[in-house]
Image: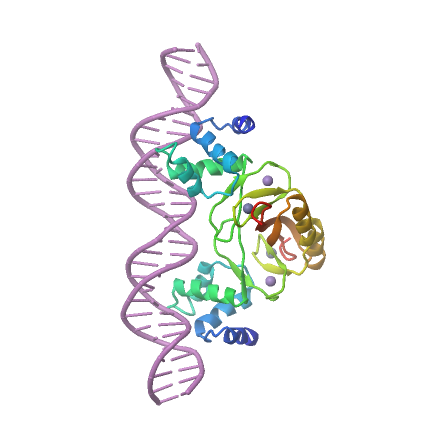
Length: 138
Length: 138
DNA sequence: TCGCAAATAGAAATGATTTCTATTTATACC
DNA sequence: GGTATAAATAGAAATCATTTCTATTTGCGA
Ligand SMILES: [Mn+2]
Ligand SMILES: [Mn+2]
Ligand SMILES: [Zn+2]
Ligand SMILES: [Zn+2]
């Protein structure tokens, strides 16, 4: 939490109970969570919490690099903690427990070269979603 | 078009003017289109066309393998023609003209091995979105 | 401690997508 | 070519995740 507070300050975001609570939820369960998931998990401790606040905080934490947003098949918003901000990598998501893990390995350069040669295009971005079963769930 | 009609029949879908028109739009412009894009492009020729019909036809054509659905950052539905159905490959999308091109090259096996060794997880799926500028737009 | 910009709650709006139902249409069969 | 039937469609309405708005509260620098 100490480190996250530092990141909040770096980004000129005030250290509010809501923001700490949202980060706490992710630290505790380490899952891939939707805004409503976060809202539901915090509703007991913070009965006055509003859903728009959760949406805003999640977006801010993403912009700060604390969270990553995952594009899932259902096209709903989902976020998870990222421990390697500002460093190119990918994420593996368990389809059963929904846990997300860092994948600090990328072979995209070869694909990029293939595309630039074959299609004569300029490759700028790539995003990889990896799914399966984590060590606990398989 | 001939080939697409065959695919429709294989999937027990009737050959209707709407379905042919939707396929025709993709054949003509070859872009990555949202349901509303398709609707707008067809509204002149088919003034009575309804948006729910477009949504349904796009989903059917995707299920038949004629179209692929792309996950874009805005999380809206988007479809494009796929000429390599039932064959593992990826797609490159031009951020300027929105054209989509086949990328019949994949280096994911190495990433998969890395994950299985490092995380002791079972990798099942992967999806790759590639963006940049096509040969015409760059 | 005080003042103020930032953060929040709650209500409301938005807008993409889906559902529902009555009507129309493609096509298998004669 | 005509007919029966299930599939397809239009149009209205519902759904529901997400965003916007505004009055109130709060963190924190001075
Ligand atoms: Mn990460
Ligand atoms: Mn394809
Ligand atoms: Zn798991
Ligand atoms: Zn282009």
